Length: 199
Image 1 (spheres, one colour):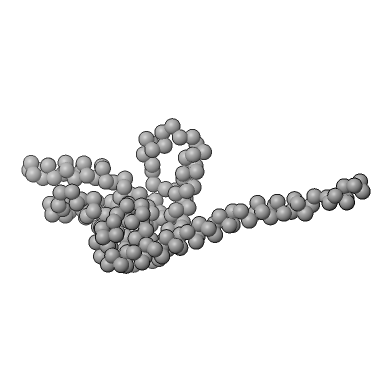
Image 2 (cartoon, rainbow, N blue to C red):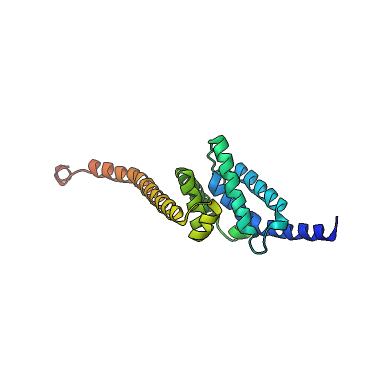
């Protein structure tokens, strides 16, 4: 191996260690499946490595993210099937260090809910929401990654967020319904003042 190849491998290894976790989380939000997210991340890194000599300095993450999204789209078109999972990708130990078990379970539940809600969105809305609001890309950067117009990004993002808000409201209403029913039942079963005086 030449020095140039060794230097390229070293640069890419450093990039992979830094960007890998972020790419994996993005892939998980896009797929909703832990194993498919790993496969998608690996595929995007392989393609990025193959193009590494052509990747401009400072643009590696954007390039890898674009490869990831494009590969996800190709796979989605080929399969059109998804698998629901309750297991998010591994979280670095430092992220949960010192947190209680209850907090960790709550975080896992929240992440699971996010993935489930994202899965209800049309593919393009999901991609826009993930890139705009999870990876914090600008509208222009999101448009470049997805190969669509800024107007399409704005429209898909607005519709996606509206759909997620509506889904959250519905979920909250369903959670409140049993408690409301139980309270109503208990109130109905409570004796009236006349009945208490008769006793």
